[in-house]
Amino acid sequence: MTMDATLSSHLQELRRGTVVVASLTVLRTPGYGYSLLETLSAAGFEVEANTLYPLLRRLETQGLLTSSWNTDEARPRKFYRTTEQGDAIAGALRDEWSRLDHAVAGLDTPTGTTTGSDQ
Amino acid sequence: MTTLIDRYVYTVLRRVPEQQRTDIERELRASIDDAVEARVGAGDASDAATEQTLLELGDPDRLADGYAERPQYLIGPEFYPTWTRLTRTLLLTVLPIVVTVIVVVGVLEEGATFGSVLGSAIGSALTVAAHMVFWTTGVIWLLERTGSAAGPVLGRRPWTPADLPKYEPGRITAVELVGTLLWPVLVIVGLVLQQFTFTDVPVLDPANWTFWWPYFIGVMILEVGYGIWLFRGQAWNHTVTAVNAAIGVLFAAPLVWLVTTDRFFNPQFLAGLHWGDVDPDRWLTFGTLAATVIGTVWGVIDVALRAERARRGRPGQVPGTAPMI
Image (cartoon, rainbow over all chains, first blue to last red; front, side, top):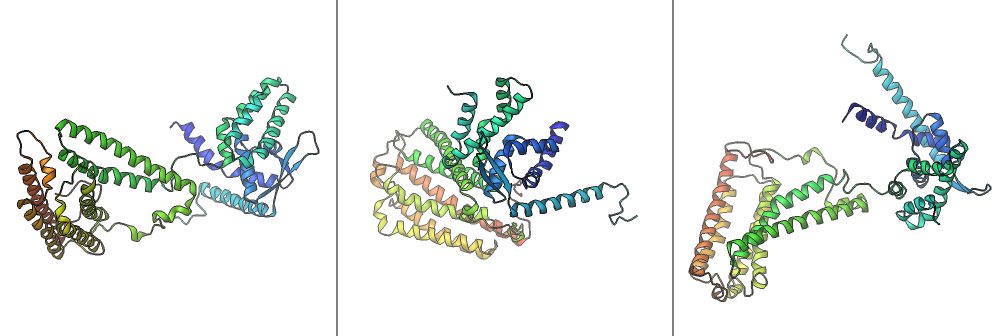
């Protein structure tokens, strides 16, 4: 495996769960598939349509999202909205994210102030 | 006329559960239309916008797998160890035994030549191996898709350190247990089957069903009990050597007597054999005697050696490594 391929596989691994947090957070205001895709990519999340659309349905089956068809406009769209349970889970995931962020930053500081080293 | 988008949507829906199709179709079409519209709005030509949108959505089969939440593998990490273990055991342990049985039966067949026996051995080895791998994979594939609810069927429970093999000298390993149990099972099955299948007339004298064949089945059941007794906390020691030798004598002595007094093979079967210059009766008698005596003596010596090795505290062989000399 080349260096690039190794990096991209690790990046993919690292990003895997972030789309869920982002979607649950964004969909506190109702949105449909394509609008969410646009919002996420504008916010800097690299997500593909073919991952996102099935994911939304999966989150709905898990009860983290609800959906309803909006037929007011010419093009009927399926709007998703984060449920209470989904919001709670998103909160827990965000907390975990910032905890990990702190932890990684702590490891990265050059003089190990947080680790009990023998110096 | 079906458009490119129609073709894409139908291809996805083809592989999606029926009750979800209507909803997925509406949603997918709206999403595609939104994306195309956005591209056209940004100045793309309509055809190019459609093509690019579909290209980004990618392989419709993969998208369908995503919607259907189908696992995209044959055997996942949960069942892979079971699959490898099962396939290995079948191919390395059961297959050689099956092929040996087929060869023995082939040799007894009327008009058998070296070539025909070798041919049927190779042919059946390939067929049986293919069946073993196919059915193992099939069953595990099914378990994979029916969910881990089926896991306990395979006797799977969480691993604990107590499950580690005890590499103590003298312990009886699971492999040795299987080896001990296979022999009696094969003898019983072979004894019953030779009466009905394999050849036109039974190979062994049917007159012995009044006493001797049931007697041998009884001895083999004793052997099964011996195997289980060994496995349940017994180590290789001199008691085991004695019990093993006793069972060996119970099996071999009547067998030798039956063979030498011409009560072992079915006379009708012997009469049906024509081996040219060679007298089948003499050779089969000699072969059976030799196999019985050598097999029994070897069995006794083998167990005695294990017991002796265990007594001296030499480590047992670690499975998968070169045998100890």
